Image (cartoon, rainbow, N blue to C red; front, side):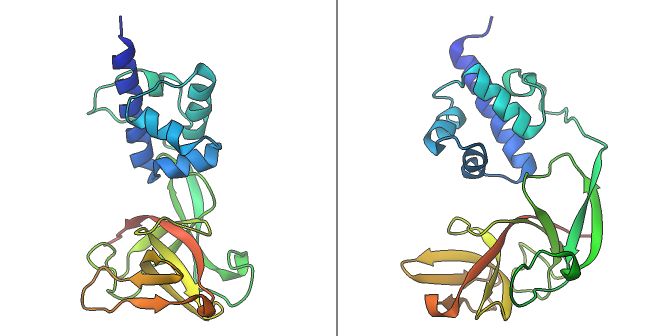
Length: 210
């Protein structure tokens, strides 16, 4: 028979695995499910165990059975869904709203549904080496549409009234936003409020076809 402590640890381990597979943070899950982030944090630290209704809510969120959260499974076995979905590739950033409309899509990419995060998703193809080695030139970058990210996360950002767009790591400090390249050969872009910064989406993962 499982002890209460062991059940909490199994739940925490399975939650982390599911979040990692989908490229989500515990903040993302807390926001999407309208659950206090402290509650999710306690689950992740194996400090508390969710009620049965919350277990079902989380299971539905990840599209798994409750046992996928509550039961321990061999770490070398990964269930893979063969269901696929079509995700648009955003060909360019247009001026004005809305940006994510069909006229701006240049193609579509079919990917396995397993492991995809929730929300409105699209792809961009990375141009240049400013985010190398994290995101090599030519990579297909999966992005979740959202208007804010945590400091330090990589995002698609437009500024100067949507006339300029870039893929950079966002650092926030007071009223200044710094767009930081991972490649030290490039210099950061410092943007103030008068340049109308707009976060288009959070980078979920980078894929290479070569």
